[in-house]
Length: 270
Image (tube, rainbow, N blue to C red):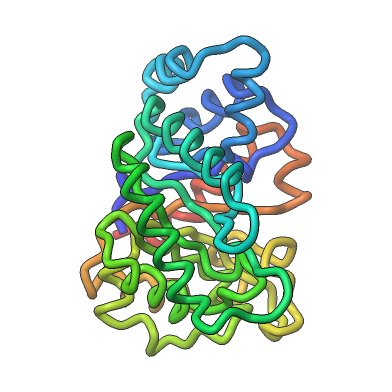
């Protein structure tokens, strides 16, 4: 892992307006930011343009690499959800981001005969439309009532038969789900578009909260060097974005929180 690959997810800092966040990230040492897109839409609703936000990023020496906001509706009513995802992709395109992370929604009633195939078909079709904006779709496992493992997310990406559909890997979800280390094989890594960074408290995965039990890298129990080393050895050369849902970090000034997160990542770097 190189310092140039490090990124911060904007959900990790709280109580700050966008410019304060961006200044904090630059001051901490980050060059790349992944947006919780609800924060960006809030700025736009207050009258700021996406182009102005991109100029602000450039002014702070930052690059938008992607973002997230909503899950992907596969079953039932999908029109409004897909329109929102396309708007998010268009926004990311203006900001310079290339990866939109989504979960996968559930189904009403009985389980479909082939939910993986259904999700793959919908993801592939929507991702091809997103390509107009230069943005790819990354499936996040465990942000879903049924996509609960790396294997299932990879199966969706593979069966979509679209180079625009891939997978997000997050150690917290890896810890809390049936995912296994041997599932991090060459095929899985070939489908990885994005990687989150976090550690976990010393609790069994099935008793852990995948968000509130996160710790800074090095302060938990996960073998992050081994996990990320395997991912890189199998060819991943993308971003590593720290994503924390920590009341302790949210209570700090954005600059202090960002510095702590950046410092925690350095032990993972070459």
